[in-house]
Length: 389
Image (tube, rainbow, N blue to C red; front, side, top):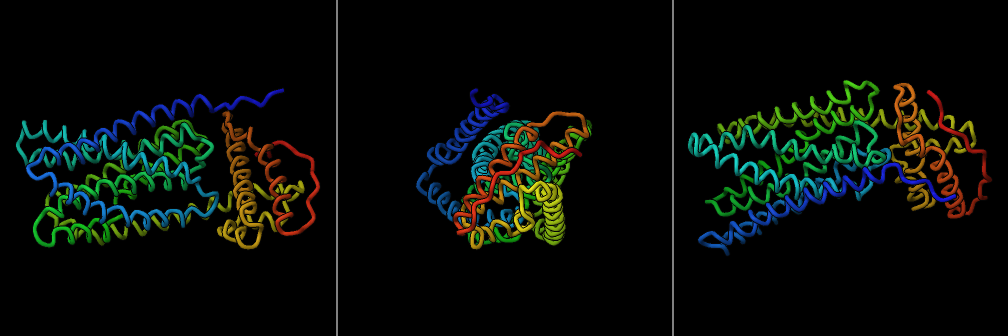
């Protein structure tokens, strides 16, 4: 009997096609703004040099910013390839398509109400609506096309943050490039505001959408599956509008708003920390019966349910096999959680199909870890189906 067909294969292929189309559209738009527009200017060399300075200011800090959400994502961290996909979407597809749409909106608005009206429409109407929709599309894409890599609220926020950081980095190349071509200390001021004081503005907006999509992943209420992402998007747009409106009215007003926004970022960070702790409690709760069944030892359950399980595995639990063991154990617990919620809500979930294979994977990894540590290899146990409730 051959291997069972992957039930999500068609969905993932459709997602790959949509992802590719979006990336091509975004890359084409960015090529126009970064290559063709400067080339058509009076001094292409100066424009390219300004963009190069902008890239030097915008891209290196991104490497630092990306570590912060990873520090929060302690339990069952998202795979690097999925994070790279949403980061790329934010940087290329979302930023490129948004730039094209916002520019066209400003062009049309200028013909109606002049330059100031066009700038207001672009910053306060088009940018919040379009940019948050396109950044949020990265989160929705993982939720729908890569369901097994999306477990709930924490995952939604992490994916939203990576998409928004990619978007902000490329957008900052444009802002810093313009500032570099401006007078005096314009570049330094722009960098302090966008790169030092408010680098988490875009992630904060889009995390509202990510939180809404995460709630949709967790809930068993059908109406909430639709309402939560929509509500998250509305909040993201509202926050984006308030910030841009303040900046459009007065750059000084933006600086005055910074303490309030920093407080908001801190409060959301505390909320995220509480959600991460909740995810850890879920993992530990759904591994307890694995200890009773003999599939895990109490020490192994504590390792998988620890916020520093991966770090401990690296240095004291067999290295790479130990890290994979921790991840497989967390995946098993979360699959059982999803399966239990699906049964309570009388719905289907692909997570049910992964419970027994994950138990087999855990046993194989236990053997690898035992060999790496010079311990006796454990004997097979009876494999059972998913836990009810």
